[in-house]
Length: 415
Image (cartoon, rainbow, N blue to C red):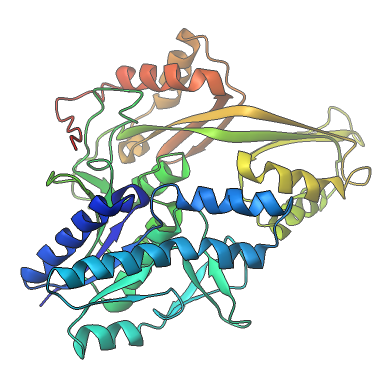
């Protein structure tokens, strides 16, 4: 019997009826002859509610205790779903991340998986003939044996990591949308459902704001050869398969337009024009687990002058970034400014590698919409522009139309 890993997001288990629906879907796979492991997220807004509870009692919650608190949401989902599956006549067992063998590094609230010791899962599958439910988003640190969490969207990474460890046929990610679209359907109503997406394209899309899959889960899947199938929890639509690139196939010029409205830009003035200055600045950010996206450095006009560095971080990391950088004031820069209301729009497509003129068209389209570009970043298959947050939606619509991504294949969810 083939092994399938199924992952259900927070909206898919938000209330009792949806948990029962997820249980029925899991049981349906089991009754078709598959062995099944399901990874569940916390219900609905549970994680946000737990964060709010922490902030009610502490202005700066201890990261270790935050992980103890936040990991409870996924455990609740798994226990409830196991109850529902048992009521349907099938044996189910729920496991915490630690019990499932998810071993991470020591970084609280943003831990990375370093190993999956899946012996307990295998025993439940092989000896107990059970459906196994694994609490997503969490693990146990390798040295201190503390509970850790993997950051927002971490249940996707849990599911892919478990699928890789068990050699699953596929990792099915169930969400509240039908799959991956050529743009956010809330902004572009006739965005096209993509039947297949290459790993490299999906990596760029996730890094550029597409929220269907977490970036680290796509990296893990690509590195371990795990096939991902994004599907709807509420319909039988075919969804989107994320797979390895086939060099023999003709690739579309542009696959999707993605966006983010959660960017913040930091600018440091008066940076010494000398070796090691930038290294020390970004080392300080790394120390507090702040991921930096785009970086632009302006060289001084004269020898011995001072440089200017601008870079973007997630808005939720801005407080940590500023606190880390303040310790460097006077030594590595003279003035710091931050702009919170920033956004990012990106176009992604494997076909860009063999088609000149794409960047010129992007800039012309944004100019026609009177959108000013603050920063630009490129890769062989992506062009990203940092722009004002209020300009993001018109920019997405204009680029989606200009590259003719609109299509009739626009499946929508009807609950």
